[in-house]
Image (cartoon, rainbow, N blue to C red; front, side, top):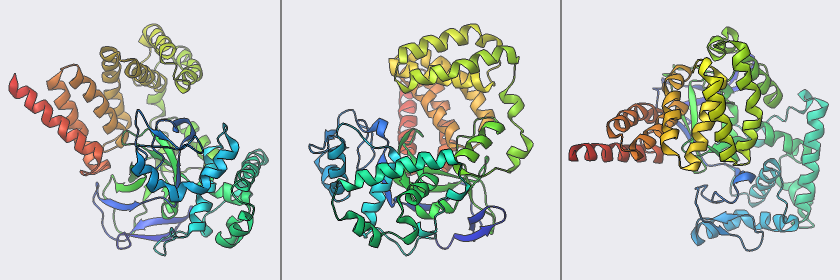
Length: 433
């Protein structure tokens, strides 16, 4: 990594990362394990707390009743990182602190064990910005409540922990409020191969990466291992960028989210031109606004895993209001995607395929290749086609997906190897016809 990347001061942005040599799209630029990480609270029962694999059945820690593991091997490997956290969690049963509080605590425990520090880091925890001076009083108050929860959480582990923290942490991280602020501003969402959130982690050097709404790099995960790949050819001295947020949204909404969450205003080419906004709002506003206004309630159904209610509402709106709205409309696309999710969870495969196939031309427009979101959507649709024995269609869809994920995920990623295996299965099945 050191040969390809260097830290520099990016005009108007502060610290950044840039290439020292020419880089080809698809090239792996950086791979790292987190300094600290934790599974998202809403998935504690579904994801192994050691390897971050999804499993239908997981072993539960008999003491804290919270951590879960694939098997005894994962549990034993996790114990050195979990043992102090375990005592904290026991004291709060049945409550679980927020993800940011658990991540901050795990960071402290990692620093106390101090086998984690690396002199190869381009950006140290001490240098990470808290941005407290830029925050509104309302946000500071919210972080102060999290800092108080962190102190309470840590007190349960050992009476002398406060003194240990003072000596183990960099000076700028010793105040709970500053530490929580640094964690919330610099943590990364850990996703599975299909880009579904499973946890959060801290990867210090990669906090140097600045945001673009159409970036030249993407991050994918293999377990907790973060892999940074180029999705465009990059010239020497050119800055490396990623997207901090989901970019399929209006310029105004992207900018609001970046200002609220990351405390900066984006001036990238896509924001300045607002080039996709008109397409996202295609159709008559009086019609698509009915879809937009329904989305918050649909999101509630999704968050509560109420798939029946979600599908009923989506299918009704799409078959009535939606027929008069172009497929490219952002709100119709979001609703179609939610209907697809609901059908998959309910095992209604034919309906799921119908919704999935409707999204593909739209994804192709909004996500210039190679983009992992488009690649993953193709994989999802291809799996449905294969299951329903539309073998020719499935093979074609898988081929399109491979042309994307070989760049975004790399040929050794589990998603890519699974995709290659499915393509071979399709070819074998076609040979038998």
